[in-house]
Length: 401
Image (cartoon, rainbow, N blue to C red; front, side):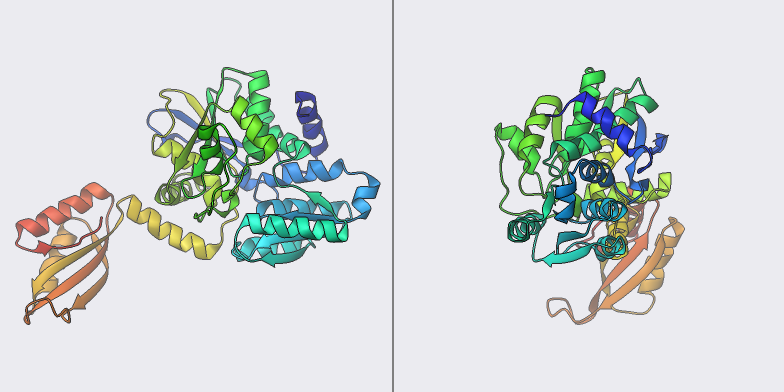
């Protein structure tokens, strides 16, 4: 059973094993609320997961340790388990979905764990881990549906109250629910008036749908680049705790998550993975029903693959109106490109790519399409450029801003 004493014991156990991560003010993220970031992306393994994994492993009996450890993870729990197992001289085997970022797979191996890649999602990795656990007798370390794991994650709630005792609300990423269960329980025991909001990716809303239905719901599939929270089914323990202690569950889109990642990089100099940035996305896009309050966003992890990061940055630039693609129908004659680029330059835009297409069979023989990719300050500047082009006689078609 989860108790406040167990969370305090976890905090004592973890004091020399994990960082007490900073809580930093982030005024650029919201004009309506005073936003703080709990920077678990700067944790020793780049994620909060090490807290629960380390505390759970510290509580194992000698017999359980002797069997060796098995776990399943999309990457962050894997690193926490691997690090804790290495410190305790316990062999570990981690089942991971084969779509997990390469950086997380390699980081897990670097802690000395053996990795078993499993086709498809986290849930498939979980099933494989259970199969191997029964076959080989390993000790299984669940990534979220375990009281000791939840207690370890709950130490974040204690730290938040210690760092900002007049906090009004805490916004927490949710996958299986271990993080928000621990944080919500700790904070509600000590400061029950503080609001707790859970955030999931719209493509993996298992806890969101379960809370709405008042019963656990398993998704047929999940679809999000926020791999750390791509979970089809909440845990039994976590569902009950979220139902009791979390005030509201909300979702954010992939584009909103990408924009939050980009904003954290530019405004706060912090790198967050998709799962870690959903809390910030919820605040940035006004999903939290609060005004003028002190709000803490838990940035739960920063282990993002650089290849994904490149795509995310591009998507974030598009979402924030800073990268725009215009398609212009033109007469195919000299000087047209000069005219278009002159207007864009005069309005302060920057052309980064141009594609000339005169092969469309549906256009006149002496016509072409000019596709221009440009950088702008924001959507307002992009709209101004479009207006200027239109006023000077250029025909825009299928433009995307």
